[in-house]
Image (tube, rainbow, N blue to C red):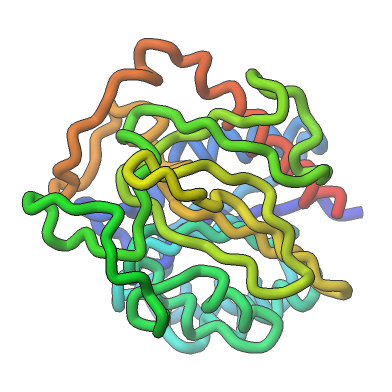
Length: 288
């Protein structure tokens, strides 16, 4: 059997002042460590979406041929995402059995996902977007005149650099590991997470938290498992995984104005659940 391969991919070209894939270095290290614990030959490719046509074609070919057994897709674009040939290639990968982890954020970030069709059609409704949610609530979870670009749908679960307490909502192998608080996980918080919603009976809500603004429930992770294809694991924000939310000393793009907290910096043991969760996802995908 060939050694498992994983892909950690952003949906934008490299941009030093954006959430490019270099800002997910700790996630990459956690994925690689978890994979090599199963198979020392486990290989992880980390890349932003290629600009050069030949590199794009090579990536799309690898996707269509099912080269990767798992893809971690950080959908950080805002109308500057992949070219149209990427989407059918990703659909082919999942259709062939590749597991897909998706994370985006508030409002219309990650809007390229609306281009997915076929076996990934549900992604565009499970991940909610301002531009495609006709019954979008008019109230705003997040209002800050200093951050005029932050608009609904978004939910405040805490400050960057801090944690939120998430409730385990399902008895699922992805959550079958001991956590710091029984029945719960501590995950990095964020002041404007995106919104995800279950839209089919193949989907299971894994984790939920709450808005510290309104007290409303916030869904954190949903897994979609359709027979004869790879799973799709949705997250409400890529800030669960980005370096800045794991260690604020890594810094953020200059458009990030929210004041961070030193909660994790002062108590790094709070990251134990995140590491265990990522390890569980990687192992589940390797064995799935």
